[in-house]
Image 1: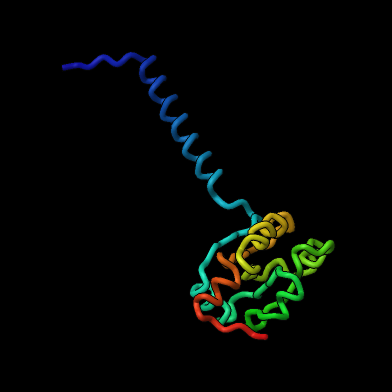
Image 2 (image 1 turned 45 degrees about the vertical axis):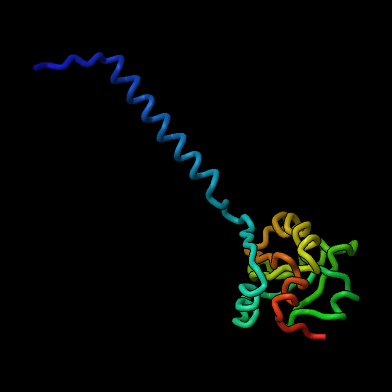
Length: 143
């Protein structure tokens, strides 16, 4: 038994397969992190504490200096998100470090993430819920 295949059908099939393959490659490219793009990860207090204890991150508190003085995660540095020179101070930091970013509740620190991306920091870990969730989890705060 002989099957006749139309050359036009073969061409259309090959074109369709090529189009599907091209589309899947484009989708992979779109979802892959771009070189130099800031990697952002969101964690809860217990995960953050493991990173702090293991000294795998620089803790960056973006609350006001008064809030910072009232209580902070041990070893944290403070750059006030609301200060006029926030971006300039951030730009002076080592962009290759991994930063654990937080504020009081997570609102200001989430607003700060686009600045980290703009300045092309390598890696930022956001403490969801901020220092309030840290304290609710019974984790230590320095004063």
